[in-house]
Length: 352
Image (cartoon, rainbow, N blue to C red; front, side):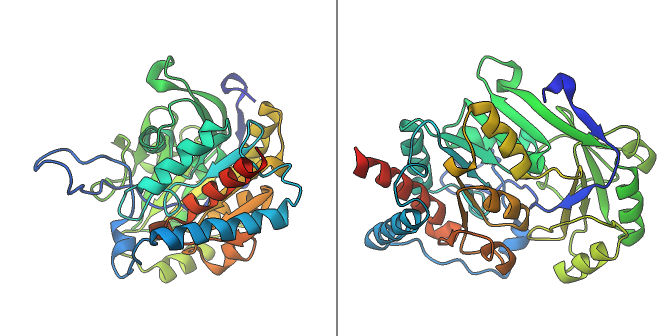
């Protein structure tokens, strides 16, 4: 499906959760410099202790452990090795990007090594295009593919294209039913819809820094005026348990949904997930899920981890995510995702 043949879906939205975006201050930058806008969650950081990074020896032990995990899944080393057939689908927040908005040197180096062998490293995120692009570019991805908005948008990065990318696949839906249900459930919440290439229309401004993209204030009727790729509900300061209960009772029937680190909900077109977009991308690239490694930490990653030949959960992931994963790695602040990628590369090097 191309941008010109996008399909509008009016029925049954599936809510999928992601985390908000913010600009983390970088102490290495000169005083007064504009911080790089990569993302994270201030609200999540409050009350969450982070472990120190792994030592050199402990990190290499992790890589060896994951080589054994991959050998169990692919004993012949025919599928889960770094080569042009391999898709490496990476969630952003909590997977390659720390909660304070930074990417470690190990993570950067592991992506570079993977690309050296021709593997397709695919950013696969709940973020929209304008929030995902800075992360992709920061880790050295200026060409290749991104899955955005939890699968509603597939983007080909192309330095020669306007803005550096082209949308090759998009799925939209009528947001009216979702907006009506969520307005009733959380009357004080902030509602927003995402416009392709035009930021967000919102009922009021999000807390400072939580959206990188442009925000345009709009009425509820204006939010419902045309099909969109997603709806966002945000309830700043509301306890996650209370928010989850309200959404569960909101009247969004016959759907599955997941909520992010904080009181933040994304609603996507029915049947659209990271996995559905990755399946279409694999077909486009002439490969399949058996040649795929996916790494994520959120409930919006469940379908992706199940789809991939090796679906890896981060150590910070909830039990509902680790339960479906092929295996679990360390949390982001202990370079778990980098350890997985380096294990894939080392298996390739061992066969050369």
